Length: 485
Image 1 (cartoon, rainbow, N blue to C red):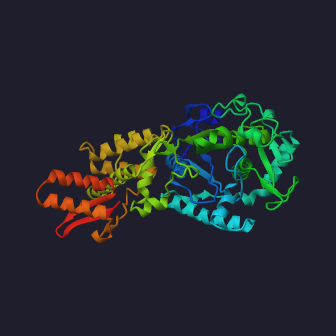
Image 2: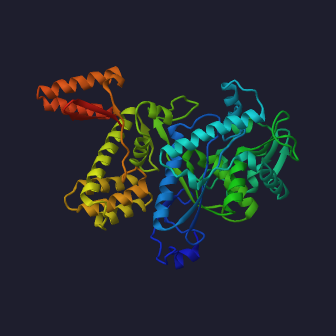
Image 3: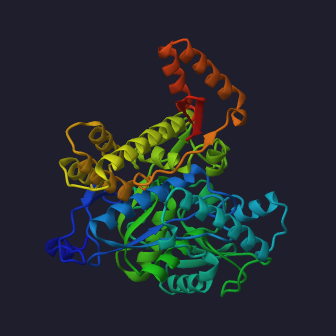
């Protein structure tokens, strides 16, 4: 923590003090008050994807975390400089430097020859899909740097050379490796003990490794890659994040984010590399999101239990329904996905949009402060407690205790922090009956029959079932109007 900033505080540009924000730091394991290293400026890095295919919705959760943090920091008065790296050339499937190269696997899947040109072309295609997915989730991609790892190979080579000169790297027949025994405190993130990493997959793969935890810095490949002092080949995966974060944000980062699967190996390796070079603290706040699970298992391409944002849209859900779904759980809590759960989130968001439109009309889009706004901000600034903040929003909007102007002010804060288009709700698509799936048409027909026969209890039950399936029903003189959420 920046002691000077903690004692004397940071200020907004207008001179007002910055409000306190608390984040849970993975390294300390505690909730801590956030103090940036530079007054009013936050340097944030989030590990990005390897572009051998589209990112599934589990992959997207870390970027929702970073976006929610950015919104909270920005609304508190900070300026955030944000980087998400793009891995656009090969590295091994596992963090432990074993398995098949992901980019090679992607090229084979798409029946493309193994060339650097094809690798870069494939990566750029999926990079555009990734950025489009982020934009569809209302993540401000215009203010994020997306550096490509292939543009920083010379910097990575220089980084490895420095590690070698400092005695942290050694050569084998299989490449250049980082000697983790030379770095005091390796594994401190998440409390990973070197003694626990005994002979296993990480050691058996390359018998010349000195220690089980040692990891590759440069991997020779006579066919592809770049020329280096160690022959033609590729930088290891871990070195790209250390190099690009240093190049774009400097030696010390305020916040580094990613999924919890990166803690044990990748992020410990980043710490070892970066602090060996600088002799300074690499990251002051580590933040990690828990897994998205499918049927009790972590969502993973290797397992095959993944859903893509394109699947969400093809089923008629608005992408913001997924954003709302993510916000319903705290980022450090595992989140179980199902289509029914997404449909429920979509239905709730549709109701929230409707309430927002009603408040806008009543308040004339004029805002006023309220106790609810203070409670909302306190929740968001307490380690991004989005479920609690959503609860405050719902309770306040439905309450007669607050004037329309106070509710509108709360909606302004909620939109700034949640990005759900609450101030200008999107028009959901009215669906003609003929366009609907057969089972949905049957539910609509059954509900209409119950409604005309005045069986309102059954009609309401079927309306809820349709809402859970992602369809909102509105009654009109000409019959039911169906909107997909």
